[in-house]
Image 1 (cartoon, rainbow over the protein chains, first blue to last red):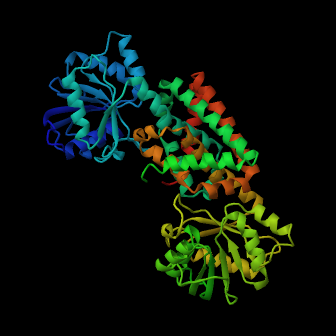
Image 2: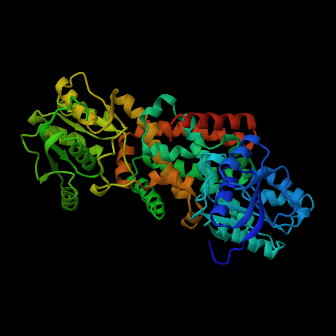
Length: 279
Length: 279
């Protein structure tokens, strides 16, 4: 825990699935708050989060004495939550992997609360729900904040400290820059893995090794959630897919023509780039 | 070790990199042979394999009293090795991930030795060389044998027992069926991961999570080795890439048209299929 981390009396997590539950576990491990309240409409998930100690209590509504609210619902439900909670004037953040459409939705329906700090922790799992949650999910991950000029500075600092308390690195980007980036680093890989798995005959699974498992793991992620993410970031994702198709055509042309110079250069560039990541 | 595993006096491994070195380690752990001899032209790799105990000794040539020879060179060098060693009339196998072109090359230059049992362990790593080798690489993996009608039955049984001794499951396929299958389950995923990495700006690597790492791990594999594999299985790989493009176009059309029925059905089919694999 950073020395300057505030210790809050009451924080609220709306949605205690993988991300919300992991926030609760991480905050508890860091003694970030005296009391962690979960708001969860799914009774089974609520009971599980409570039993696993991810939250201290479950509440039907957001308590008015909350000092920080984490909105951990799917991206397409964030804007209405922010609108509903704006009158509390409490610092709050979301965790959605698409940012600009949330801000646009708020702008087009009366403005963005200065207490809302759009956030995205770049961490996840192909598993979902409270039983997949764990305190280390954000450790070493990067969390992107996409504040507006109108964002309250104290709210921004508090949200930043909330992520630092989870062991995350925090960085800031413009919402549109975030969405373009994530289209390439997250949304397109999911799309490609899902599309690839459609091509695999279940009988062929027996003839798959560790590389196949790694490559396709993200295709096990929640289809409903991912359809919503892909739709919310549609234009950026389609642009990224077009770029991929161009690269694919160029490489298959090299392979078809036995063009070793071009083919090997492409493979080497890719491998060299991937080797910059240390695992 | 299966109870019926033979204990041999001398086995030879030609090429003591990731696969050959792991065979040595696995055979040693299983007491499969009294003496394991490595033949390796790269002096650094030879010294390392010896130091790591993957082999008992390094020899410049294949000893004539070998009882089993593992040819662990890249696929495109296997045929000439088999031809060179055929006169020893000793059971031998390769480990290449493409089978039909090896057999075709042998057929077109005088025939396939009945002592040669084409093999492919579906196991690997993005790392290479003897220092990546380990005794458990083949444990739980599937090894495919693609024998011909002319293959000697005792050689076939010995090679099968050699793979069983490593903890691998052994299955048999026709060479062409193997190559078609592997184009989908291994070669295409590598191709896609390499192509995808070309599109990623190194500056974006910071904004990548665990899913990205998993999806792109195989793009760190040896480019020279993979160019040779893709070229050897060119027609099957290009067919698989065409199929992928068709699926990709169909999915991006659904996304572009906000066709939730088609889009979600594709994601669900993919996730359901991936979830049949238990990790």
